[in-house]
Length: 215
Image 1: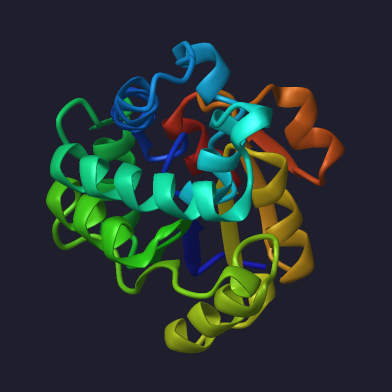
Image 2: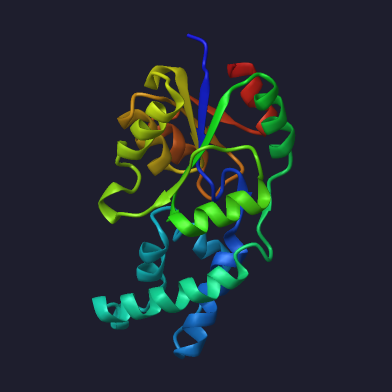
């Protein structure tokens, strides 16, 4: 079947945002005299939303719900002001998107990042490429729940089988499988290739241009 639509994850797939996210969280941790974490650690904190990231970053001795809520709001405030400071598209992404647009393939972003931040970053870095841009509004609807991907397919006017879902994590691959979409992983993101394959990736891209072979 010819693929007519593609849904992209954002962080670790389209953009390398790790340093902006880590810097914002470490700023909050420093302010509270808690231990900070290096960038490698944050690779495994990212992927299930910023609140989940805050939970993982806080020390186990200060991980109660009220503290998580407090730190989440602090982190989001810092991150919102700095979310495109170091964040940039991976090499080859713009060339891929231009090629996809030239083929009239419908493009969307679905992220577990908060909806307003997802829209802000995607619009700032990729104007006029994606519609719709969907982030997290309701905790129960975050990936791997396929609800939002099904909504996107309806917006596209396409069947699930006509859509490729591209991401860098096992959660993304689970989301694609749950939505009956074609799961494609990327090797340049925050998770190892084994995680992608074990969670259902049908194909793993080593560079963005590799997607053209699937099409």
